[in-house]
Length: 170
Image (cartoon, rainbow, N blue to C red; front, side, top):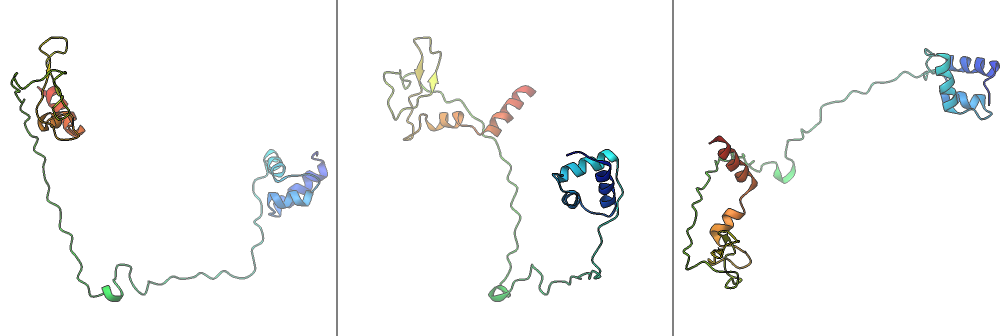
């Protein structure tokens, strides 16, 4: 499809009448698409055009009124029910517990061969020496450490980051 002078003039006339690109493409026919019309309009520099004819009936503007019942009002069997006034939650500041190192006597420490399921598996000492042992204290069922070493091993991330900041300040 080529843009002949006749087609270009027809395009300009229809564009100025306010027809849409789709309507112009349908009017021109013979394989002219909406996108082809839009492209030609831009290349020709056609910008201002007349608006499409509006309907002859005047538009009536609807006015809105206030709702007959506010959204916050209770209705039905809850209308007279007392409303609970929320009480502010008390601000509780976390006091970090000072962790003291538990001194496990050498007699209670165990080797890997003496370690049992109900004993604490917290390593103590240097694993490359013969004095290396495990805590061996009683551990709750299903946990690998005694209650003290469990608190050390499973600190919340906020406490760990707070402790790192404290070490940096010293």
